[in-house]
Length: 144
Image: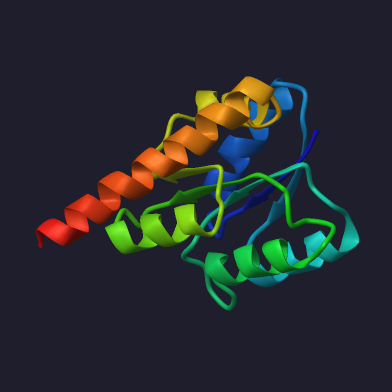
């Protein structure tokens, strides 16, 4: 599978590349949001790992472009970000991400997310996880 890794930190992109290529995937890297949008115009990825905080164009804009292009609207996206706030998580889940992972993360699990996204049982698990995460996050917000 072709996987787009979008992060402004070269070390994170390299860590992702090594682990995903070891699992047999093709990896395309983008060091910022503008590069990611260009990569999406050139070739459709099968999966995207996306950072939120980047210079120039942030991850939210990249996600918006992904979801609004007919050719990429259904591509699974995992947000890999340092942003752990409830509002960001709720926004991500509401925009249909596959998962929300707060850095630091276990690079050995990257390939598992990709496999789960294309496993019919995994898709059901992801939908259940999305519903649970949204319910929990909204509950926490209501407590405040």
